[in-house]
Length: 74
Image (cartoon, rainbow, N blue to C red; front, side, top):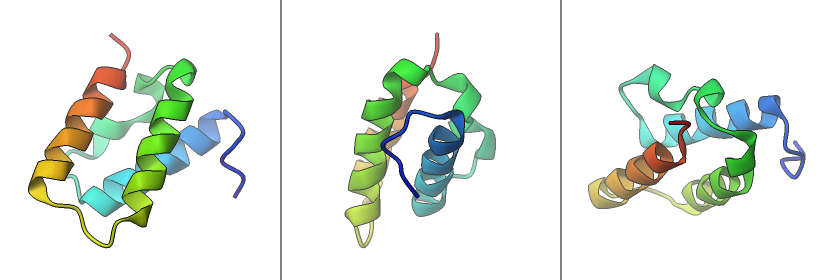
């Protein structure tokens, strides 16, 4: 999958993968429609970091969720 292209499908894919890796309880929290396409690169950076981790600590998870919260549309 070519994630260099800023498409709604790619945004949705990355957010779903982040959600799965973090095992988030609130499935609607990472809905792609709640993020501006202008934030695509930031989300891709988070996605790539999360995918490289064998596991994510609670502190890291909190930081990621906080960062994603700041990237959401207001």
